[in-house]
Length: 235
Image 1: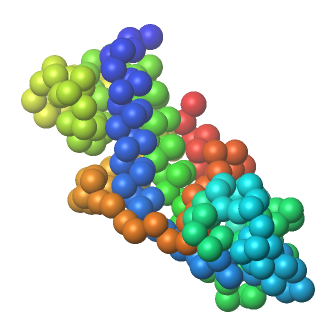
Image 2: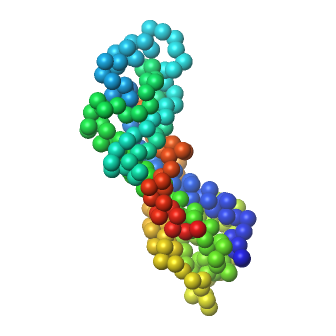
């Protein structure tokens, strides 16, 4: 095994993560405190949860909340979401962590639409990291990596610790030989190139105002659970 990207592979992975974060900022889920309650508490409890936080000093008002959404449009029919509730005028946190059946359909659909896009983004950039690993192991030269996946040059530009790697790859030209490419790897080269190019167009320093309730996919939300093919194509 050549390991042509050697010690820089970790930094290249970090570059992929940074680009995923840029894309994720395009797909923000912003909720009001009332909408948050409507997802996780039955209507008869809303007033209690809101009034209790107004008249008592509590530690469960605002902060992080791990919720689960079940829906047939989601991969695997469910996903976990981390909600971040601003302490300003926040209700008490519901004990229930699953979306309640009384939750308004329009609100649930909004959350599900957001989650589907967030999962697709995670899959796309996870695939880029798996592709990096595959190229690192299966290519004999850096020139092969550059020929098969020119996006490597973009990733190299994201860190001072990898910029020299682009120069080591030489001119863009067809190598004398290439590794055998499974169809999945060919698809991954095309798919990830578009994702990386799109992310590079976004401002890396963009700052958005924090809504009363924001969300992101939980670290424990295995986006590949029902799409193992999408993430497991390479390996």
